[in-house]
Length: 258
Image: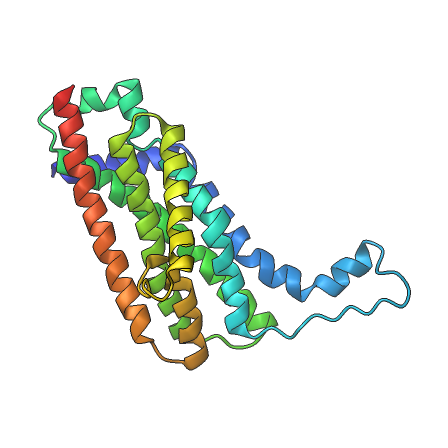
């Protein structure tokens, strides 16, 4: 009952802040931007004045699997940035303003407080991502060829685990630090460091969460789920759980210390 009350509070607050409107819209724009712009590039070039006489400009014929990876690439960069920005003050902002103290002075469980915020933010992120990918899938099927609905669901499922990890990482730093800007910096910095380490030691880190996109592309090409994708998904889930548990313990320790 207490958890549901906290969860509903977060959901209502996200609605009042218009996050349930602009976050899905931004995700949809990110998802369809590359598929549409690449398909209509010749017309776009012609509309802005065309190329110099004698210039030959030919676009490759993209396969549906290649186009959907363009959408995922946008989520891996701008999408992650948006998630970090909407989540950086989830706990840190309340701690800095003193709102968390007013809430926790009541008999509110630290577990309920953290997990309710995490769940509300995760649902906003995954629902927005789903609608973004749904729009991308729609245009891909119209402009480039068939991408089965089953593959669409698998993409949402597996890449959604990466976004879950990003949300949980942000919650982890929220529980640790009171400054929202620093939370955003550390979250993005950690993701960048993970990417570099994965690229340098790729032969040792086959199951790094940063490899999810690569294995999703392999899945689309082979029409089967690679064992590496299952392993990477499992590791990503485990890391997210560990980060969430660590967030609860760190937050409790810091609040009790205050």
